[in-house]
Length: 227
Picture 1 (cartoon, helix red, strand yellow):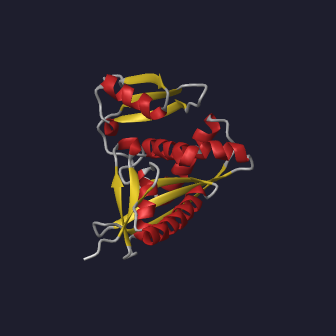
Picture 2 (tube, one colour):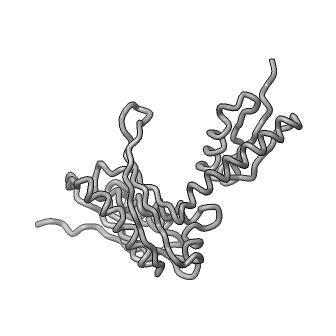
Picture 3 (cartoon, helix red, strand yellow):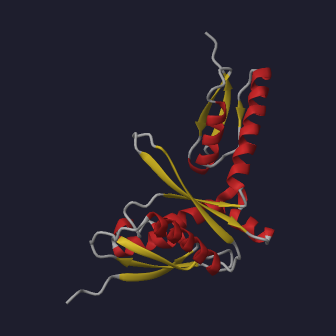
């Protein structure tokens, strides 16, 4: 007779915090459990998740079409629980990986007529969007061992943000060249810092470094060192 599965429901300010609390109480790692988001949570209501210990059995393989469909369904379910109307499309791409293999990515694009709702999904400087992407990857990761990375974008925010950062990086690099003084940016996420690094990596007149710790970590543009 099979033992009943260990399961726990727990609430916290965010889904990530609730999952961490549940894992601590169960004494398990994330690859040993399945995670169901019962309430996504918002500024007025805490998130609620159900975390269940899974049997140590191989995951059922899914076709490529099923993987893309499942990723889209996960995001659509989260949006429904948040009472946000949005149309989700999925695009799967492949690119060379650093280890010589191929890196698979599924990008989920969200579009909606309610601009305020779309703005709420993005959040301040994309903070809510990053949390949303984390949740989708967290849930999807339990469905197949060969699950690709999932990127969530709302209203083409990521591309617009990257273009803005690249433009700002080049303007500030010009200022550094003219003044000869370093220019520090305000604290940014790792993704934003990476965009600025990449925008200036081929510029021989300046170089960039990250300084600080945690949420205070920021990027600084320096004039190139002379011999």
